Image (cartoon, rainbow, N blue to C red; front, side, top):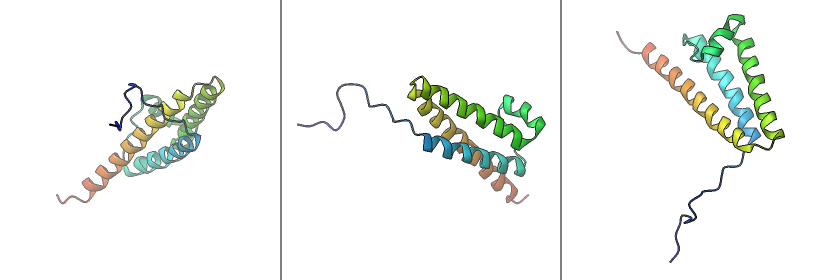
Length: 111
């Protein structure tokens, strides 16, 4: 008899992907800018304060910080940090898309 799941208890950890990380950064910038243009508010207190210098500049600063974190994680051989950040930014982009969808739906709802 064979079992489809490992009985060892631990699943293999996902391989970190720098390509996925970079794509998620671009998607985060695009969805954030689109949401802001549609009237959404920035959810992050840190970014909200940075937005005083301008949305594009604030997002670029945040992305530089994210790239520095990944660079440090890779230098110190901590690939789990990259995987965690990929999941985090996938959630952020999904949130942004949900907010955009809600704004669109509320804009087309009859009064």
